[in-house]
Image 1 (cartoon, rainbow, N blue to C red):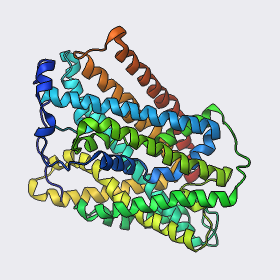
Image 2: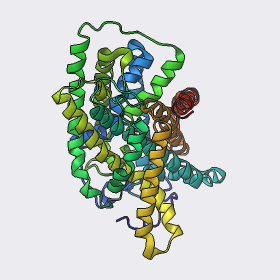
Image 3: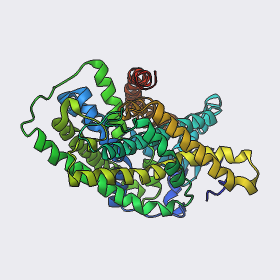
Image 4: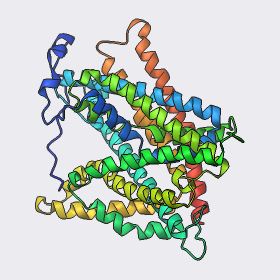
Length: 453
């Protein structure tokens, strides 16, 4: 059961100079810390990124073309890693400056603005926090809609027992939307579980199933196209922008890096954990996306498992993917719901908070299902979330926060190189947000028209 949240801290500058900042040991002040090792932190970073999104990376490669996709996959992976490094670096400065030993992503955003020396800027701290909250909610609930589509497509193919499936039913079977509607009650029921510890053990099994799907992708792709024939090297600008949104969604761990750092035994070693984590994320994404595209070319569908043959082992794997994504959906539902319910619970008397928590949980799951029914295309949702939400969370905001934190001290360095670095990186993020956003919004509109009109 969700407990009413403690009052959020008032972010203000306590340490007035660098010496006072360095004198504050935020690690020793942390309580209820899991003291995760570097190895454990790497595992959490990889687990947080390589979820359901990786199952659609091969369609992203189809959009971008082989050579362009490989280059941009590596570029955006390490570009994202560096931006998230700056985010955590800024957070660690703010811990010492405010003498608050741990924060969430929205906390860091609010604190960076609240502690800025210009009072006119500092007044915008709450607004910045609300914007971060909204984008995180849209991103994570959008991911839940993708999960529902993965489950529905997997079940539909198993029921129809056919090699190729699409939204329309075959052999008298119903449309994909019927499966999505039929899943609403099971989805509501698992999301009514109010103790995360009951779901957490299944997360380990889900990771194993995704790993199994990754290796199965290589095996079956080599069976279909061992000579790597008919691969296109590049695509046009429009499809390349589609690719960027999808691949960023497949790799993103923007929402989890600060909680992972908060629970490390040695937080100063977080850059090392992030480097190895992003290396494995890029490697895993390339492995599934490259071989998935090699095997299925222009017939690629998401999730990757629906492309596998309908023999015994692939059928079992498709069923396991559906079951494990069902549990992952419930786990992914928690963070955005808690963000929403922090505000919503204030509208109800304290003795009825639990009742209203269950009501809102059911309502939100139904809304997610409606989004999946109205936009029944995994890749268009991935592209939209990657270009609109994650361009902010993973690229623009970390660099903006870094500018705000470094402004007064320690400063931007000789020739203001830190400022120019951040501005260039923000510009790349804005380009992805505007150009990639327009392309992927257009794709969402096309999907809506095709599916509903």
